[in-house]
Length: 175
Image 1: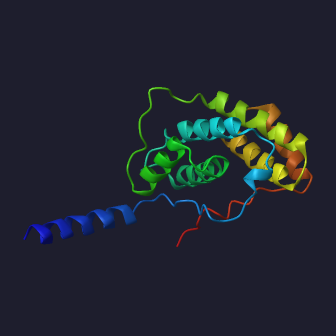
Image 2: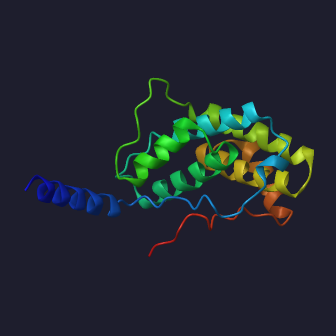
Image 3: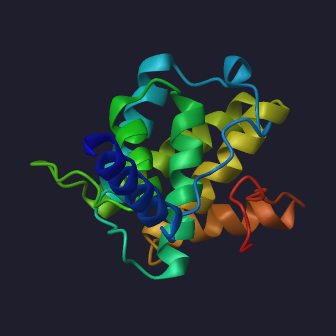
């Protein structure tokens, strides 16, 4: 009898997780080669943590656009640092339809956007295809986090004018 009750509860919990509006990013989709990116491992780790700290403000009942942005941001964070504890935790909790973990240190959006912007510029200056791709993703995230920053908007406009665009197809579309 216990096994039957446990099985029923487990099935119901699985159904609740399946109904989550969050669509986890495809972390196997090739975006860029992290080994070729001209950002130090500690910088990549800090960026991933800052992105996740910002995203954890988004609840599981957030509007679709915010959840899609969360998936995009966490997809980049987990590519910059695949072993980042906070990014993995926030992604996992959102995937299961649970609220993101509360953190004592709230990520200041302007600080996160500025950090992303500075590292995007550094990656772009380093040259190369993978650095250019990372720069684009970081600029797109920075612009979404701080849409009022003229410097970020200018750099993103130059990036797009040069014919570049971030490929967000690693976030699944509506079924």
